[in-house]
Image (cartoon, rainbow over all chains, first blue to last red; front, side, top):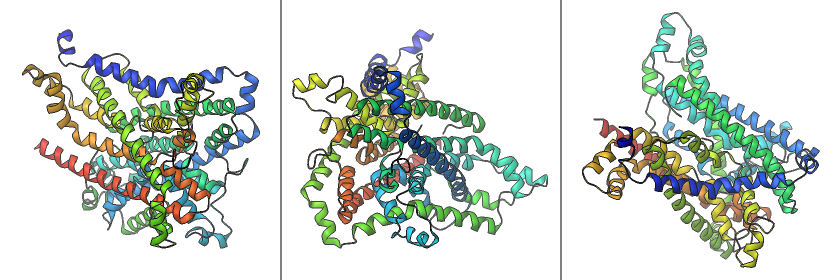
Length: 277
Length: 297
């Protein structure tokens, strides 16, 4: 039986063969170059490249700002998703469509636009300047750019779960005497949590590798506002291919780990809510 | 999937359901607070940057704006961006169809691992995506000496830009097609084959009509990213004016030369592209929803 039903449709060999060849040529073989190049370095050379004070400072900034940006997006993204699914308000459809702007807007454009707004003579920057708050050309600028590019993730992972949520659970909570806040805390939030965490992880993973939107607004001061992807570029421009590759290998290992975590979170969300995201 | 949280799905209007029910209706001050805070955040991070692009582009007047767009280097950047998208999107379209056909219509070991590998480019930093091609094709790279002997340039030339663009847009179409085709199964294709249709006829007349909206959706997102990619292309481009600058790179160069109005003029074209992308995307979601609703009746 299995022999019969396996090969009724044609094209298995061709489509799988093409998939594997194309995947290897475009993705796997070039990516392996990073690790092969790294193995030609001595342990000392490698450590020098990936653990110098300037590079360590860039990790702290990249991961710290990415974490904070993902956290900001988790809080405000949840509010926005809640508003978009639960409350009718004028312009709701337009707001909903524009949520995906960071996916569609090239990062370089986002970078110069955010710089224009948050620089001290910009629309928002000029309001914050008298308060002594400086955003562009320093670490807060990095945070703003990473918040921008991570914005859609939490909204888009939480939104479908909120839409699918039946009203019965909250009705039951209300009939048992729960306040709205208790119903949210004890009934709605636990259902949302896996999706929220997935959105957080996606925003974090995206922010860690981000380059284009950050470099315009960061000021790129070594030890202060220099992100790790920029370190790779700087090393390449100095023809330090080994150093650039070593730092890239650290970034790649972290990306792979994040990918595994995200896959796990997505499986958890799917089990909890009965839908894939 | 890292990189695209937007799944191919039409958004139902659920606000009325929740507002009609006293158990799920929030008090009006909670409503105003959440909408107020949400919209402020939306305005600060999304709306203002979008408006700023156009305001800055026209700051020195329409004359400066249009002359920045017809400048030879800008025109060459536009051409290169169109070329990169015109090649990388079809490459990834063919790949997406092949991968989705193999994964959705057949059983084989390691399928989930293959799906994870297809997602890989989304989790790789764009800078690293550019670097890997430098390591393979650059002067110091694996094929560097051979390419030099044969006078072929890939890095700091157009082929490198196309490769880097193909890498960063690699999963877009496959990711849209795989879950949809897995959900659709293979009954319809098997029926067509058993009625005597050829493999190609089955694919063209049965599979394609079933996936056309998801396919279009994937192409739209893939194209937007292909035209807008900055980090990966920046590494392999070499920034040769009039030759290896795409539109995003042209924006960077103009901006770093303090030609802000010109930089924002080129940027405004890319912002328009983003807006067109969002409009098309919303339209396709709406059509797909409509299509599904009819299919369910």
